[in-house]
Length: 91
Ligand SMILES: [Zn+2]
Image (cartoon, rainbow, N blue to C red; front, side, top):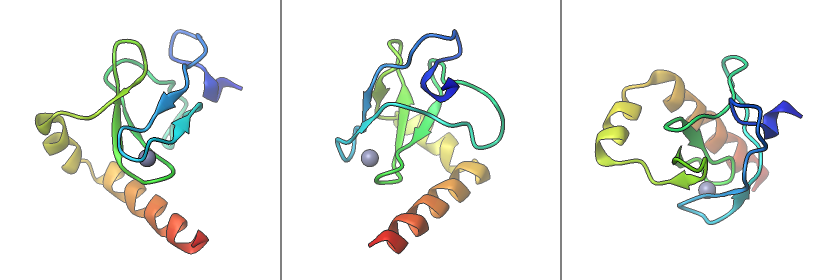
């Protein structure tokens, strides 16, 4: 269950999405085999918004500067679109 581990091999804490409030207890790297570390971006599977791992590997909202950088990342924008389309299909 490596999806529940951080990049140090420690169990990820349950994180609460800063937008929808749902708890997330696992993470998947869609482009490789990385595990979460401080400063990484996470996309909530429930609401497709962005969270950033803080120093305790819990979620915080991204700063305005981080949001500007993230908006330039085509991979993240594509993943947000996929999650939104998937969630729309479920409704
Ligand atoms: Zn959410």
